[in-house]
Length: 126
Length: 463
Image 1 (cartoon, each protein chain N blue to C red):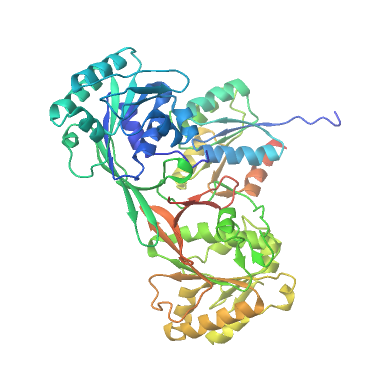
Image 2 (image 1 turned 135 degrees about the vertical axis):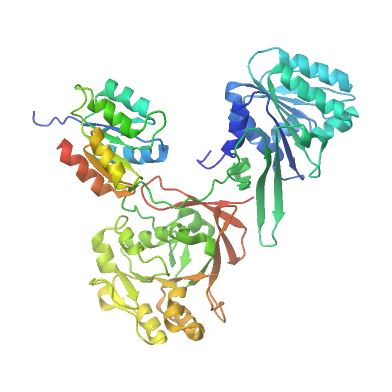
């Protein structure tokens, strides 16, 4: 319908509040609806509750790490189609490989530019 | 409160949370910040426990008048005063009265015990100070201290003893933790340190922390860890605060300088070896803000920071970097239109750096960044006095602003340089600090502020 835009929902998961706030600032400015979580368990709970269109997921998280969150979502047919972008300070090739095996769709290493992040998100949401 | 205000080392708070009945001795001379530290500890712990602050030094009203009302309101604690135990009993809880009466050591112990045993909720008691209490109650044997610790155990209370005596204290062997607050006059500025002497059952990642009592709050500074914002964004520039001045790219520094760098000034930034990449936290805001305002930048990159040029692309639009920035290098490394080869003659090189190219004539005033270590390595130490003198003269004549980075381990030792101002970047107690050598200032901590997606900092004075 012309004139009506549906906001796409992104779940941002990081244990560093500064990074979550910054991601929220960037994504909301672009018109996305943002929900946040600060650990792996909360990430799963928010996914079940909010059903985001995309998940930005840090790897190193309290309670349940990002890889385990990926595995849990990938194993559930209701959520396995949600694109997952791992964003992390971990730079080892093995981490990347493990992330993809667990069901992640993209992998981006911190720090990254706002433009690179938005291009990646648009690839999946537009 | 700002984000940095109101903080104490997390390991101290964690020790109290992990171990019920934890006891801490806080030592320090008068004015070292013991009371403000204790109130901050109360504020952080009193959310889930009943708090009692016993002041033996001043009456309640004086005490309340002298502390930050926000800290007091947040701490949600009862303030009791017993500064004269022989005649009067003072007590005050904000809004409600509470009384602690005692005349002698047994009476004090029994009143305190009865006051604390009432609830099963964990409690924290601060005795400020144990020395005054001992004197008032004439209690100079270990029996009194043992009694207090027994009360802690019996009533599930944690206790903090504030002491004005820095030397060994009988409590040293009895309490779980000891911290000392140091207030040092360094001649050119004050330094305040929190030293963790003992923390039973807790891990001590860092023994000594720099702290400030700025805005009436106790705030320690965590170790400086150099990093970029997780998501790097283009700078939203701040304008010049006043005519004939150029913004430093940082509001706090602009205010401190009463309007930024004056046109024609030549600023020397001395950098100690420990600062390392931390230098970027200082000069990225300056350079990116200047470029984002559409002005020119000419740069001889300090040694070891050559990758900065590519990082800048994340914070400044590409066309501004291409058109308004010039990099002067000893040999051409990239096929880039904004790269210039440094002249073999050092003095001529300075002329070329300081002069305005026709293509940049609308980008004035220019900011010149000079890595003096790079120039020394290229032209040798013998030419440095001449190069610097010429650079200072040309900066004044052209009404540019030059920021020269000087490394403490350079062979050239400033010689006859006569900068407009001289600032020193250093690392003290793992915190990144800055201090004015000329004009002389106190010590400031550069606290990173990456919340907007680009490099910036807060300048926090040590007071």
